[in-house]
Length: 523
Image (tube, rainbow, N blue to C red):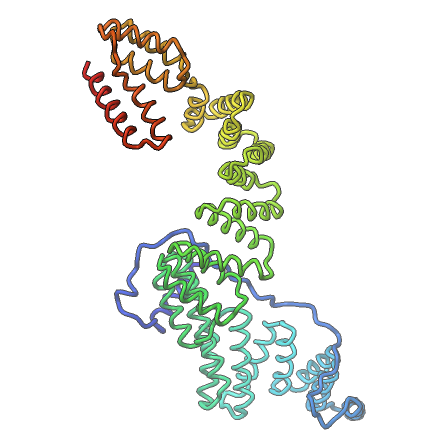
């Protein structure tokens, strides 16, 4: 990486990206972007002996003509006392057209023995190895062509050699600066060479993209974006440049700008899966959930590998949950579960969805699956316990209590488990319980509190006689022998009158009940 760093510094000085000083200043950005890996080119592969004959469409010679020429040259070579390098070179070129690669190479090697400086043989030799990705030898041959003609007497051959070396460096070795130099050399020989200009522009574009990847891997997103800008100036329809710039803008938290670049990427390539995926995430960040769902939907219509399909289903399911659409979320998690059947988190999320949908039995089954895969999941015990409690059965409450206790055993500091256990253990408010509390308050002399307890007991169970009896004792104690002013009774009568449609009378009773209650509170 230190070599790459030195090269980047040189490129910064030689080809600075356009932009203001403020745009180029270092900014504190997100960290953690993985370094872009560079794959080394395969410099050596095994050569094949032969391929199909290669003839251009509309060629005036046939395979038979070429074979006849090979026989003629062979006779000449055999008759000559000192074989001609030219004959070997020509026969090698024809052998290559006939697809006889090994024979062609043998002839070129013999040509070098007789005339090591023959440029046309060197060129054919280099092209042969270039075609077969034996790049080191190909570069050596093309370099030899250039050295053998320092005055550029054979300009077309030298230009061709520079272009081929540049293309090897550009397309196979990712050495963009060296490729630029080779293309520049070709342009200096022939300033009108369109191919050289096109190749050099491509090298510049790749160099800027490489530098953008370097800065992106270092978390310097603003500088990476500037280099993408330069790459787009050179190649305005570059899908890679727009996609990468959009991704960098996402990392830089400029989500709307990222959406613009990712949309441009999709315009250029309607099936760019990662562009749809990243754009959906950007839409989520700006709370445009409808468009995020649309992009996820489009993705699922494309041919995805299992890894991306799984991520799309999970993301869309979580988005549905955020929107409160638990049924749709559950369906997505079911599909994700098919792709990853041993993922306990999916079962846990499904359990939450079922609980929100009041499908408590299904919720219990989902949490059961979580605990099979992860027997020490505290959250799964809490979730299953809550699902048992929602059923309302006594057996379910007991099972819930066991789950909460297991959760606390696994994590004594789990607040959720302790709160849920507290709800599970709390006594149900009944008329006898309230009456007993009223008796205690009465014995302690807290008569207003006792009266409230008796009135609440009567409210819970209007037929519970003991509550009436104890309330009467308090009235007796206060010498309220003909107490007609019982707030609760007025309330009951107001409720009945309201149901019968006597609204005016009901309102009067409610007012009287409130007045009496205020008097009791002042006792």
